[in-house]
Image 1: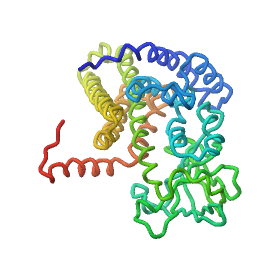
Image 2: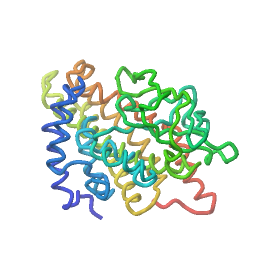
Image 3: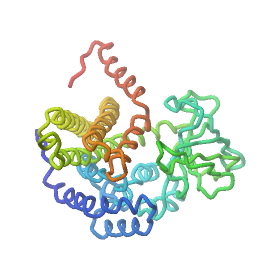
Image 4: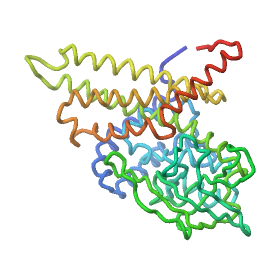
Length: 390
């Protein structure tokens, strides 16, 4: 067993790390201000340097990295919230869905420009007023009328819908099937009549591009159905499982960055007769952060290994989604504490990182659901007379 980064991955990882620390991170202030020309420049540089869409399959224009190798890339790409955008990986989940399930006409229309970031995707599942952790309650409907899907309902937290070319919408299409076979996914171009953005929902004071959208008799062709009718949850699980791992990979990069800031601050600041690094209470922050990051990293690598080997890794994914989000929150919180008043300002990246970290305990399933489902899966092994093998 080896915990070393594979030699085949190291040069590419080093190149991505340099790209992030030398170009993306210094550009964050301008990117936060909405400098689209700068973002496009970074994307063009990433393409020219062979760093573009590294986790996308080669047959659709990506780098074709194996899943486990991609972990090592993603954990340094995740240092900045703009890493995904600059390196073209933000479309990975949607590209994989289209690659596997889209009709030929939809693949031709959306897939190639999606991989090249010429267009943006968006995904609509969550609805206001409903507990979306139980998605069988979703109320948006789609009815097939004269060869067209007629969609009615309201979604929110449709990230990027304001600039997306299309939205993949989870709709109830069946009335006589079991709850988990009653929903389908349908591709809806965002310029379709009846598709109306109501607002950008602010999240913890951030304008995060999470749109609330009304579907008022939106009509799209029957061929816009993504995959088999009634199989929306199957496709969603295929999307969300690896997607949760992608979050955990990026959280490792965020945690590493916060840890760097924490440790450098302890050496740079003096109080009560010596550097903060000499204070035992603050050394506790270093120890706790190290152990939590390392534990989360090994959990993430284990989950990625299981997926790479062809498994579903549901226990591993549920565990790391919760543990990773908690770890990230804790490490950033300690880094803020060490920075004192400065840590509460925008003079460091920690204030935005902290708010994003808190949201991580809710999106793609709240902690409580992952905890319960993971425990249930483990307990079923014992119910059948087995023992869980670590």
